[in-house]
Length: 343
Image (cartoon, rainbow, N blue to C red; front, side, top):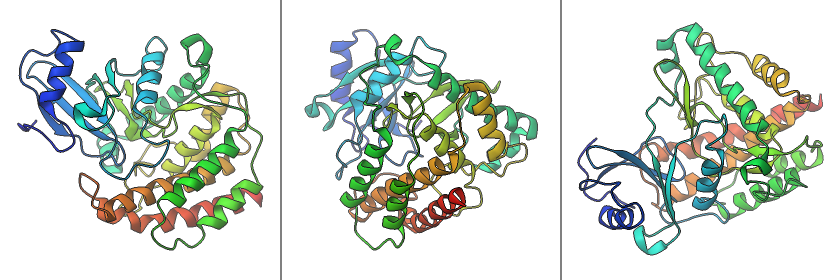
């Protein structure tokens, strides 16, 4: 870790003062911090005093979409899931006072592990370990969806009734808030999803962005933490499965800012992933094509929002200049997937 006095977006002196007041004795020396590369939405910093290490999460600088980047939700769901089989980092504190670092934020323990983002990373593991990692990802999703929300205090964490309809409207509004250029086909995809909406199964705790580089694995291929809960809610669990399927199809896509691991030797096919989830969860997955097409639409909107922030000079990190170029591809794939589902 490089010695960084005050990285942009994080005032370490004020953070230290807060920690000393709220968690006396936790921090033993001056703090240093680095921005964690790889995040494309909320900003993530690794902070250390030389002995202990923590992670700070805060919203992006500047343009923030309504209902997005809710630090309290992310903190709440991880705290609630701590006693369940779903591995999550231990939360340290939530601060909703904008005057400390300029935005709400929370602090959690740093969990060591690897977020697999590329096919080359999995190739180094070999086919057998790659298959085990990918199937563990599926099994952990089943564990998440098996959690009883009421038993962990999350029974009011969302409104499952009408979930898919609200999701479509929400992401349509998010798209409108970030429109800065023509995107042929995206309105057609949005409308087609609305016409073909399936009936949802029983609700569950939904992660909202479940994928291989939002979890950590240790050297023994154990999944040590599920991260990035900013989109979590109560709703249709098959939206998580659709996202997982969509991400698994994105190998060989240039400048794709998410996992490109599906082409690695040993990685299970889409059919295997869906079958394993269905067998272990007992859910009907016959409409998975719709959920996958919705995942394409959702990701296109998210990436367009990031592209918009980049045009305004309000992003930190590398690679943002190329994100806008992949948005049309996801629109096209979403339309293709939905047409295939109908046919």
